[in-house]
Structures are given as structure tokens and as C-alpha cells.
Length: 466
Image (tube, rainbow, N blue to C red; front, side, top):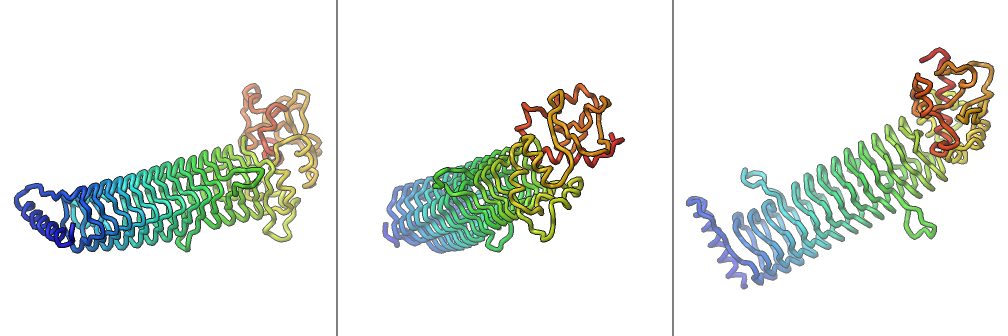
């Protein structure tokens, strides 16, 4: 179609729309399956009812228009340029928009009827460029957005379920309060990306890099449950009140072909890592504050210089096998001095001790030999053994009496219960407490640090407390 013919049709359609508003009639313009490649649609504030589905709009330009009520379904829009245009109400679902450019576009919120956000469901936006535009509330469900470039863009309250953002690059993008279940974002460069309060459950962000770009935390109050972050670079990224439950933060491979997660200098505050697997992940100089690490597995991980502050970290089921732990960041601090501080905050203490090999021992799976070796190295009297009834207890600790929750004589004094590892009192009922004991059959479910914390709890408890 020639440009003049298109201009005349759009003009008559606009006049009909104005008349239709007065008469209450519905006005449409069917340009579906029409060849409009290279056309220009400019300064059109009223295009409602325009049907461009299945049309050829390759290299077309749309400038200063209102696309509310316009259908681009299944249209061929490769290389299309949309500038300074209102997008709400437009339907680009299933359209081909490779190498498209969307610049300075917005959602018209000035009109009470303009409530439907733009729809890019299943659209192909590969290598598209989005610049200084507003996509709040938009639907990108299942859209192909590989190698897209996003700069100064808002995608709040949007639907990005099952969208593919692999190898994309963002710069100062807000994607807050959005639903991103099953989102794929492999090998992406997420710079200045804010994902506050968004749901990324079952997403795959592996091999990607996160950089706050000076824009603040990337994640706050977000759900990252069952997310795969294998090989991602989270250096310096902040996570506030996020859930990583059942996620994979890395994978260990003998041939090293799969890169490890790098979370160096990252900051995790109030985050849940329950049932997380973090293999070969680097948490060097990271800080964990008020985090939950229930049933977390850190295998071949590195925690050099890291700090765990008030975390639920040394509890049953939490394992750190073969992990290198923190080096000191407080000169002159000694292990023996800090032993006396365990009763105040054992987890905080972990973050400021020196001697890396000592940490490896703390985080190993518990055995009598390993526990007693650490006790000896910190200069603590006593040792652990299995008593006559095959229950773990602390013995040879000195002349002072220990707190004993049960009146069964000397035989139960020094006995270590699982509840002590969590800082709780064992059950008063001796028979009920038998399900709380540690035996040769279950000691390997705890770390050395678990048992040492229980000893610390027992040592600091007053004899007459209950």
C-alpha cells in the first residue's frame, strides 16, 4: 500500500471515530494481511479499532500516536520503530518484532478508559531495544526477548511468566511487583535491575551477571524459590528479605566446564536459604544478616572473610562439607578469646575468627574425633564420647557441675541433646527426651559446629536453671 493511501485511510478512520463517539457506534478499519513495509504512521491520537493483524510492517515507523485498541497480532514487524507513543491497549501478541526499537513510549494514564496495558504475549522481540519507556502492567508472557537491550525502562506489575531474556542487557530497569515465574535469563547482564517484591519462582538466571549500577539493591522482598543461578555473577548484589527456598546457587563439576556462582561481597539480609544447594559457590567477604539456612548444603563453597550475623546457620540438617570458611577481619582476635563469647552470639563469632583450616573443621560432618580435635585446638577442657547407653555426652570438663535437665544422677550429666543445638531446653520428661538424643546412628546429620554450639549452650547454662 502506498503511503498516501494509508494516510487517507487513517484520516477517514479518525473522523469516523469522532463521529462514532457522538453516535455511540463502533468504528473499525481492517488493514489485516496488508503490505505496509516501510510505512510511516505519525501524529495519530485516535486509532481505536485499527486491525493490522498478519500485516507486513517491516521497518515501519510509528511516531507520536496512541495505539489504544490497535491489533498487531501475528504481524511481521521486524525492525519497526515506535517513538513517543502511548502503548496501552495495543495488542502485539504473537507478532514478529525482531530488532524493533521502542523509544520514549508510555502508558496513557490520563484517560479513565485507558486501563488495558500493552500485550506482548508470545511476541518475538529478539534483539529489540527498549529505551526510556514505560511497560507497567504489560504482558510479556512467553515472549522471546533474547539479546534485548533495556535502558531506563519501567516494567512494574508486569507478567513475564516463561519469558526468555537470555543474553539480554539491562541498565536502570525497574521490574518491581512483577510475576516472573519460569523466567529464563541465562548469560544476561542485569545492571541496575530492581526486582523488588517480584516472584521469580522456578526461573533460570544461570551464567548471568548482576550489578546494581549504583541504583541500590537488585532484590527486595522477592521470591527466588526454585531458581537456578548456576554460574551467575552476584558480586556486590544486595538481597533484602528474599526467599531462595529450594533454589540451586551452583553446581560442582570435576572438569570445571560449568562456572561457579560468584557471590563475593554480596549482602543477604533477612533471606531464607531453606533447602538451598550451593555447590562450588564463592561467598568470599559476603555478609549474611538474620538469614535462615535450614537444610542448606554448601558443598565445596568458599567463605573467606564472610560474616554470618544472627543467622539460623548451625542447626540440624545444615551441612557445610568440604567448604573453606572465613578468615579473620579483626586483627589480633584469637580463637581462645572468642570461645568465651559463644554464649552471646555463636553465629556472629563465626564471622570474625581467623585460621581458615579451623573453619573447615567446624563445618565438617560431626565425628567424635573431629569434635575432640577442635575442642583441643581451642584449649577447651573435656571431650565428647558415647556413654554406656550410646548417647553423646561431654565428659572430663572439670570439677564444676553441669546443668542437668533430668534427675538421673551423674550418668546423664553432660549429655548433649539436639534441642541444645538450637538453643532450646530439652523436654522435662526424661522418656520424651529420648527422641532428642544424639547417637552413632544420627551424629552424621550434624556438623562439628552444631555439636560445639550445644556444648557452649550446656557450659553456659546455670546448674539450677530450668
